[in-house]
Image (spheres, rainbow, N blue to C red):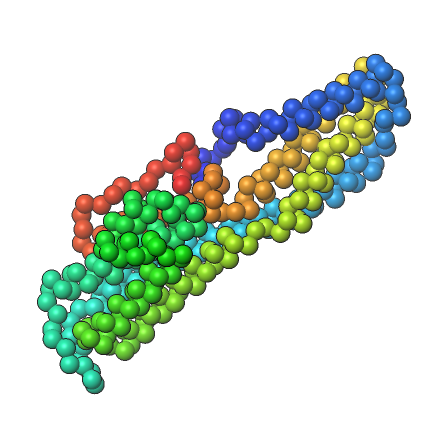
Length: 322
């Protein structure tokens, strides 16, 4: 996610230079054919071009709204992951505390060391789930050992890494641990167990929301025709402008070049903005900063465990927070 209030010029040029070069060469060609060569039939009335420009503006505006909605939904989902991760840790620390009195409960009291171990396992597995989901969405499973493995038991880490969808199986393991805590250790009553299972259900729903966005590309009919219409408008623009500038004098036809390039660049930039916002989980400049969010979750949850040696929050790299 780009965090600077204004874009640096090298970023603007990165996305603009190909279009600017193409528009400039094309406009110069139109002016050359119309002026020195004298082929005036190239000019077309300005009114149809202006009408087309209005239609294209509406169309790419509609497409960009759809692209931004995908990004914002993704950001809301990860905001939910942050909130429910904190809730899960609070439940793990406050519910799993001592023997639960109730019908059918016949288990020895848990020692302080056992409780501490179970707290750590439940909380650390949640941190592992957040990072595993991030890697799963970005197709970066080669980073598992550095990003997920440290939060799991070695055997569990190896087992989960073999799965097609590791985050799902991490949630399944959390549910299995809750069953043991309730049925075998007597450390959860039914009410507490239901509440913590509800949190797991929410994690599953949030993961499903991420996968829906990831696995459902932006409708190609909107994205493709947006590109086509912008470039069609850019192709007709100098043909409509050149006759208008000629009315100011024969030498003014060359003003077609800067003005057509400027207008075409604006339309093309709007189209590019929508295009680069379509997929918010690709680890690009404008994506959801999942790495930074996962680090913030790790800090919050480990601090709840009472740990003091915590990693620092991630800072932007070249104005980009990943």
